[in-house]
Length: 277
Ligand SMILES: C[S@@+](CC[C@H](N)C(=O)[O-])C[C@H]1O[C@@H](n2cnc3c(N)ncnc32)[C@H](O)[C@@H]1O
Image (tube, rainbow, N blue to C red; front, side):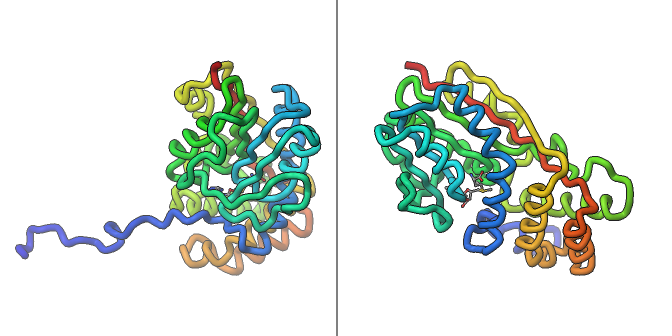
C-alpha cells in the first residue's frame, strides 16, 4: 500500500449500533412506563376522543411499552371492539387485561391485519427507529379506508433543556446530562428533530385531514421520577461513552430526589391523519 492511500479506520466501517437504547428488559423500563403514562396518557386520550374513539373500534397500539394505553383503548372500544398491543419486547403488557398482546417488530414484520384498523397509534416509538419510514408504511397499511393514524413523538431539539430555569449548578448539571443523553440517542439512530416533521410525513404517506399539536409538562413529581429512572437506566451507557462520570450522575440523582429541580421534557408532538376512502 502506498503511503498516500487512506488507511481504513475500523470504527468507520463497523456497522452502527442501532439497538433500542431504553431496553424493556431493564427494571427501570417499568418505572419509565408508569411515569410516561402519568405524564402523557391524558394528552393521548384527549386526542383519541376528539378523533371519535368509541365502542366497536379495532385499534393497534404499536410499541406499547406499558399497559396504560392498551387498557384505555380496551375500555373505550368495549366487548364489540378489539385492541392489539404489540412491542419488540411485550414483557410489561398483560395478556389477560382485555387486549391482545403480540411480539412484533414494526420495522421488520408485516402489518398484523392489513386494511382493517380504525385506529393505529404509536407514541415515542418512531423517533427511536432508524428505519422509521418503513415502520410508518407498515402502520398506514394496517388502516382501513377512513381509519386514523396517530403518531406522537418528542422533538428534543425544539426544547433540549432538562431545567428551563437554569438558576444554579444543579440545573446546569441537569441540562448538561440531558445533552449527554441526547448524544447517546443520536448515536443509536434516533432523530431528535422528528416530531416537527410529523405533519409533512403523514401527508407524504397519503393521509388526509392531517393536523398536529405540541405539549410538554414543566416540573412535578412525574417528571422527576421519569428523569431518575432514565438516568439510572442509562448510567452504564453514559459512562462507557465517556459522556458523564459517576460523581456527576450521583450528584444529579441526589438533586432530583431532593426535589430541587423543576424538570421538564421535550415537547410531545401529537399528529394524526386519516386514510382516504
Ligand atoms: C419510549 S418507549 C414508549 C412506550 C409507550 N409507547 C409510551 O409512550 O409509554 C418505546 C417502546 O417502543 C418499543 N420498540 C422499540 N423498537 C421497536 C420496534 N422495532 N417495533 C416495535 N416496538 C419497538 C420499545 O420496546 C418500547 O416499549
